[in-house]
Length: 186
Image 1 (cartoon, one colour):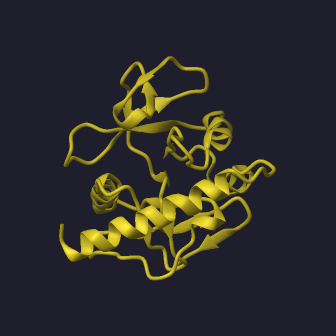
Image 2 (tube, one colour):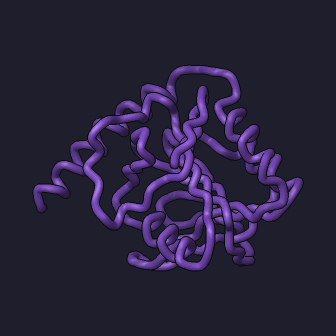
Image 3 (cartoon, helix red, strand yellow):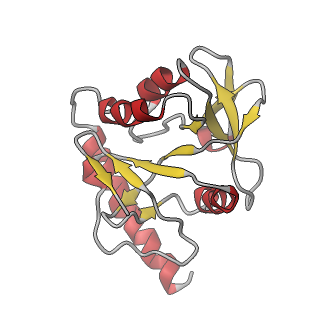
């Protein structure tokens, strides 16, 4: 394991512990601020995610957005490939996807202009530490090469960290939404 990989691994372990602690604290509607942000983008194709483990859950905001425009969820196509996004609607039939995330049973791919991005840790400069597979970095790089894309990191405030071990290939977030604030960047 390289030195940077070891540093990232240690940062992820610490971040997972902070995320679990934040997840275990009961609070009112953690997706409410995300819903407020998305209300300004009604009808714009977006992609959310189906929360796994202790991730903050964007589902209520996705349900609201689906009443106004297309919503997709990520589908992992291959280990080193960008994500694709399959159209999701509230109550649609789902199946198990890779890594335990649920995906729509019927593939109907769309290209989002807004991505709600899960993460392990974030900083106030828009840095994001993910799970280590590079899926969102590859995906954002490809989407941004074709036009504007708004990458919204969605996390508990407790996932904030200073000094994230970032690499040149790491794609920055444009905005971060937590259960208590909206951090606009750039």
